[in-house]
Figure 1 (cartoon, rainbow, N blue to C red):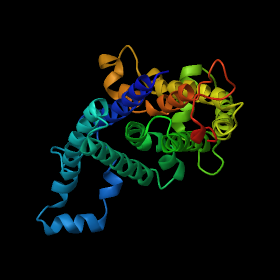
Figure 2: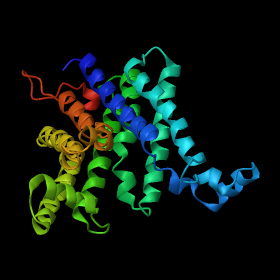
Figure 3: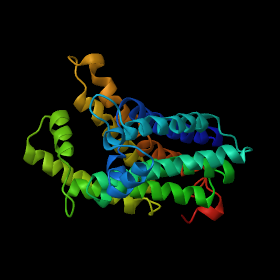
Length: 291
């Protein structure tokens, strides 16, 4: 695949990630509650003359936290547009897009706090947090540059290691919605769903190791892309129904869109590591073949 098409793939992944989270900020409530609902933050806003109802909302009116979610939605829109328009020649555009990475890190940390500080919750967002950084690095240094490849590998490992830790449920309990989606989509019972999640959890960690082995890495990346797409699609497939308004798209479709990096990043590396038809080496230059 040409460099232009690889860049386009990264642009699409970054755009969809920001667009999905924009949807959350404007139409739902972004997960900043746990990050802001604490005594120190309220003490600060109280000094500014804001009461508790004004801070958290009264039920009839939105409070500061709900309004903040919508305000933050505007930078997400800007980052979504920048993902499609950022140019290599514009340092400011690339810096702004890297700022979008910071927004995604804060959001992921808020979800981590809301999940009672379960580490996989933060780790599995690695692909989303790093998606804009991969795009910027690919533009600034090149798609085959060592830094671009390393960031891409880190994004894949964190995404699938976090998901695998939850699927296996060894230290952190497997989320109930994992079982729910599996049972609804596959039409199986609880025990079968547990076995299925055990298998896919093991395969998640196989991916994390297999991408370092030259003879297995492209197969692992292809599986990662397919599985990442299916897990992203699982949300609307399990939740949408004919009897819901707009088939439930407003509630579930964004859950699939914002997870686009989960399959686009491994797909990018799959095409990047495509073998030349006349050589046993990959299409990468010598300085990146060892990765």
